[in-house]
Image (cartoon, rainbow, N blue to C red; front, side, top):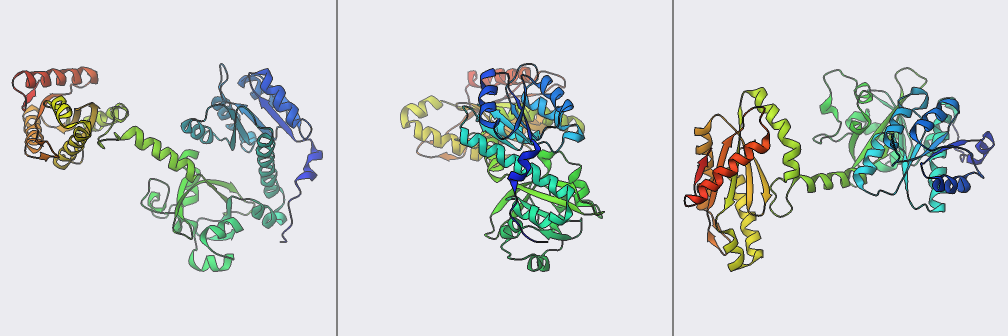
Length: 432
């Protein structure tokens, strides 16, 4: 195989066709005017029209608006790509929404890229051209094995030709990532790709396999959002990749494509962390509670356990803020959370409900054991000196969750128990 520069322009005579889908006429007219000199243009005003156009015509690229009435861009993309005949058509989303979750959702349904509104002409041309180029390169791989080296090395993404137990080829981007100048040196150290995937993460690795199971077959069965692996580069930096797998013409061989999504993963994990943990105290947030409580209830039901809710509130906390200032008040909140966590079991959950009010969620046997557990927390707080303030106390109200009961009803009952503790002198536990 010889290396040659990929001649993109030679394919322009084949009348590559781009489908523009947008419910705004002005957007369709603008994009058409920018691209019509180089591509054959088809248009659709909604998702249903777009699906019909794809059925009737050979489409090489779809520029798809996200926000549309009746069927939005995500739904339209999923329906188009669900047809095996269309699975390789690249889709670029057109959107004015720069929210990371929205962008991640687009990649999950199969989009290759996105372009933000209002459009920049140079960006529109460049991103369109890049996706068309990638699309044509993929077709070359399928059609002409003799151009394999050319096609793989023309890609900026990392590509290998491999089976479940060996690696047969790796392109330059792949070798550069691991710090190797040639494939032979790389192969001396690594025989199989599965050996490279970092273990101990929530992403795919050898830990996901049963004995004797093919990692490629296992990975192919996963949804695209779960087809993610972590690998360490030559600087020992952990990076994240979405894995694409295509059958090669030889039995047992596959073209494995690694697309770097490290920025997307890191941004997603940061957003998840913000939603999961209270920034000040490190306790869980109410948003996390709303997401986690249905699963927690189910797990307890399956195990034959009961769930208890307890609301705890720092006694006279307003006086702490008024006397020592809010900075010291914040330190007291953080230290109180640390104290509760140090006395908690692994399955206990502490949620900051608001201000100085927190909720404990515990798996418990009965009200007697609940009272014992909450007394343990109360005493731990009472005996812990706080910064500047000295010792503080907390009042507790607890209740058992009744199966099939609205969770809010249980929390209200715990709140009433808390009120009873405060009314009767504070620094005590009441169970309703």
